[in-house]
Length: 71
Image (cartoon, rainbow, N blue to C red; front, top):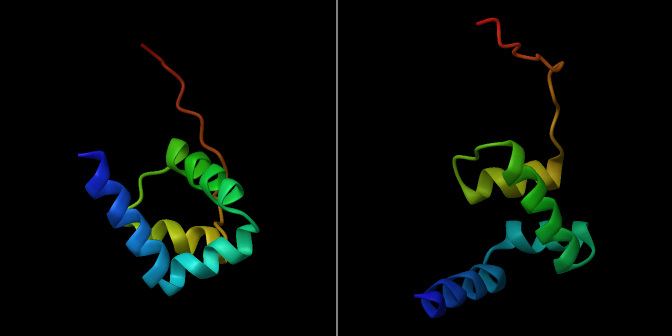
């Protein structure tokens, strides 16, 4: 199961221009994966393209709203 996932990831890296642009902007794969992990921890993305655009173009955050437990 890991081998098909690895092959799919490698083919995306070689063929996806958006991924390559994000990789170049990040400077290294390590920095790219760390940025991806940090965004995954906080947000739900509809697609990998959405994640790549967030890294490439930036993300604008609305003011923080804290949900207090009032029960």
